[in-house]
Image (cartoon, rainbow, N blue to C red):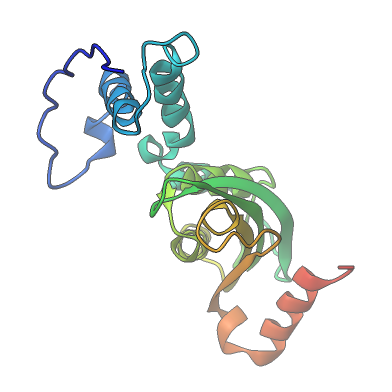
Length: 211
């Protein structure tokens, strides 16, 4: 069956460098692109079930990629003076992100530990920072390192440890189709990397009381 289609308007040429502060989400451009994808796979984007799909997808992308237009460091600017110099651990921070290779979701938990150097940060600020970094086209390896480096820099911490456990849709619903598999990455900085006893302590805390 021949579909009557309307040619999409030409899209602006992409820029060589992406500056989120100057590039808000272009919903109209996403809608046009989604229509093209539906045409390309052999569908009719004007049929009842799909007619609003380009708009839904555009709004979804503006949500799941909102971290591109936010600064994660903003959540780590308000610090509190505290002489506490032992390990601080925030475990099981749930996150959702999007793999940049297939634009499919990967989800899991982030475990973050740091050793203060005279300053501590509010408990809710670390999950907020994780959310900003996760809501971008990402790689789990990069996400892990970005969290560790940002904490180390912004908190001037003596040590930082980050462990990320996640399930990737690109492995579970396509390709090898290995449901139940997970990926674990870690990034250690400062004392958490250089001192074996501290490294062992933080990993024991992260893995403690696991069935």
